[in-house]
Length: 289
Image 1: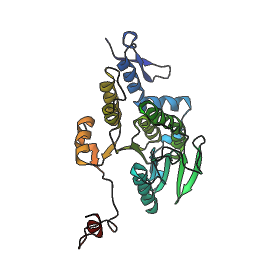
Image 2: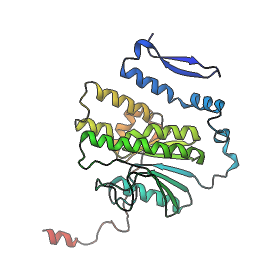
Image 3: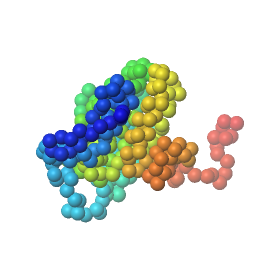
Image 4: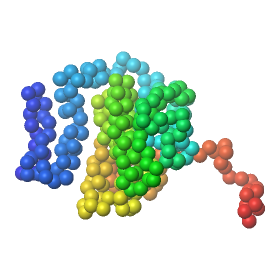
């Protein structure tokens, strides 16, 4: 038989192993990772070994839920002026202003300039407080000339460094881990942190990054497209809530998630006090002809 077998440890915990004749295939490796991401078994093993404090797994009745601890995990954040950084920053400030305890894991501001902005550093971990929000900024490598491979390396560099800050957040015991895609590479860390801290895992998809990469021809190895889509769908299904920004994207999300009750529409927003229907023609119409 092929696939994954369960090996029993001395503590009685079952962990997945790879059968030898399947170990040479890429899919078998992904299935092995899939077994590891059934984190309830791993979590109980870590508790037995004393690696994870039992306090983390304790029932939360000792803390009234008058507010939530929300960990936002995003590659784009304030003060970036456009796109995901703008929306994620405004959402974090809105939640904090309403009494929620918000922390953010992100890189220093780098987009859309493709250059880390002063006075921030691309090489150091930095912590700052912005409007009452604790922001943990992680090192990132930003290419001078973004191309297919260098773009992937940029995303991967943040995924690696941010995992350090993410795992440190387990002791904080967030109620919600809110992860923003892109980048796809950060989803495993977000899931691990949510499961080990007992938090709900929420994935917000601003763009289907794997689809975009395949359409741009960034992965040309035969079979890589189907393998990446399989792994993306596997990760998506592990989140407790998955949201996206448009009706068409929501339809695609429901197809891949196969759990439509977990999917919801969470649009990007505008300030209705500034953007609203006008009672008279705009001066720009006359100016532009």
